[in-house]
Image 1 (cartoon, rainbow, N blue to C red):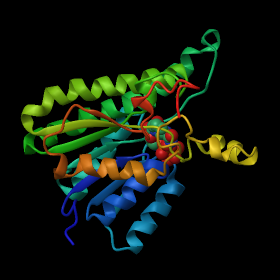
Image 2 (cartoon, rainbow, N blue to C red; image 1 turned 120 degrees about the vertical axis):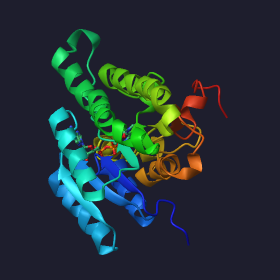
Image 3 (cartoon, protein in one colour; image 1 turned 90 degrees about the horizontal axis):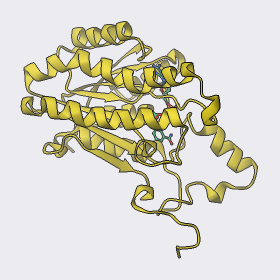
Image 4 (cartoon, rainbow, N blue to C red; image 1 turned 180 degrees about the vertical axis):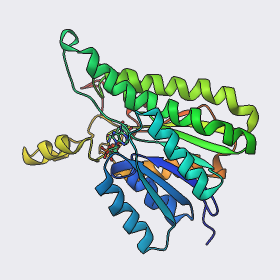
Amino acid sequence: MAHRLNGKNAIITGAANGIGRASALLFASEGANLVLADVNETGLLQVEKEIQSKGGKVIIRKTDVSSEEEIKALINLALEKFINIDILINNAGISGGLYALEDQESEEWHKVYDVNVMGPVYAIKHIIAHMKSRRQGSIINIASVAGIMSGAGGNAYSASKAALINFTKTSACEVGAYNVRINAICPGLIETGMTQPFFEWARSSGKENQLGKYCELKRAASPEEVAWAILFLASDESSYMTGQAIPVDGGITASMSIPGRKI
Ligand SMILES: NC(=O)c1ccc[n+]([C@@H]2O[C@H](COP(=O)([O-])OP(=O)(O)OC[C@H]3O[C@@H](n4cnc5c(N)ncnc54)[C@H](O)[C@@H]3O)[C@@H](O)[C@H]2O)c1
């Protein structure tokens, strides 16, 4: 069977866990060579081992995406090892806390923006000349339904994901003429490290059947279900798509979800 990413080289940030890890494993199974980055080196080593045990080609690099210097070093390493980079997945993200408006500290806002917005900005800034010169590249930013509607995260998190969606569109329009595509995926409720405390709380208090109940599919999703959509945007199958923010959310952004108005 033909692999959808045969011969392609991809960088994935936040690859030690959750959606990034699921994407790394799926991309490897589809033939991609990988450069994986995360602040969690132990998690990266485990993903590396798993991919190598199946014959995949992978390099890992401990990287804090909020540091422009570390992102530059990551991209230099990727180009040094693989010569060309076809795909960049800006996936690393943090949720920040849930605070009342009057309690929101500027440090918290900066922390969330540094990872969720500046991480992708730095990575795109330092890879884009390479992709433009080859007239080839697909970049996927992992945003969130929280960047589209209220109710799925704190103010700083939601605003950071809205910023990332807008940056996806403005940057896509700047580089479209060079055949470089930039899209975003907006996940709904996915069981990952980020949401683990919420899932554990629901299970331990007998509320498991309520997880994801506000979306149309009435359930939460696995990281793999998001990875499939990321794969599509990374592959040539999406060759005419750019500047889009695609929800993978069980239909939650399609509905007003008014309690009592639904069957
Ligand atoms: N889980 C959900 O329900 C959900 C919903 C919408 C969007 N998202 C987004 O999906 C992306 C992946 O998150 P996840 O849900 O898989 O969570 P996760 O916590 O399982 O994975 C996130 C990974 O990013 C890494 N990371 C955090 N800060 C970093 C930094 N500064 N530099 C490098 N790596 C860093 C973490 O170590 C972790 O391995 C995030 O951008 C998140 O906002 C998640």
